[in-house]
Length: 335
Image (cartoon, rainbow, N blue to C red):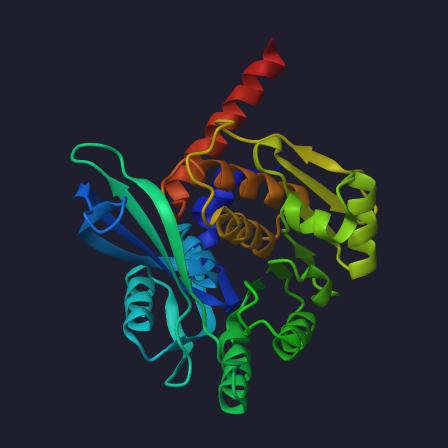
């Protein structure tokens, strides 16, 4: 096993990860419960603040940047307040937004989580409201995205396709990403919500257990995960299983099981998959093997699920977690 902490500190900052896919504005509306309404038996929530964070592919990019990698994002936002708020957040997070298209015909996909609570009490999520773009990408935007992907990938060390089924990660984009990755001999990673079979011949993917079970059925085993990996033409498949850890199936290798890191009771799993693929991509871009990269991703995922809301993991947090694990292993070997 290579020195993972050294890789994070010395190699991550030199690696460029291109993320192409669906950008989401994750909004958190926080309010204080004032009283019960006279109009209906419901609480009245007095608005305190609304915060816009990066979601979807944008969250994967934000995590690459927080891990000190060079994050380059390809996608589309609407020419609307939520699109502008998302772009501002990404720029402040050191994500390269030069290849994000802005369209008057496109509404920025926005997920509003309403967090309510009384004075001096923790706020709890009471409802989520999704505003999903209903307009298909037109030919002009599609061509712009393809052109932007080619330009963005000129210095790429890995490409991530982040598909939330909102239209950006279509067959044309996937095919182009495959061609670029093959020509440059760099990893192509896929994170797809329920459409994994539509992204064959990538290097690897990071589906969660639910997504794999939708393809294989409820009887998920390492053997049928390996068969799915073979059918899709991947070199490896990393299946995340929440508090049960991860399974890595790699061509020509026995299954590799990773136990969940940290608490078995997560605080919030929002965006955890974006964090996992960010760390996984950076590891592969640095020349780590699949198992080493999966180990990084497992620790990153274990950190982020202990944070509230859509969150990122910093390089320092990941180094600390890896160092503690390595120290524990060394002590265990001496006993």
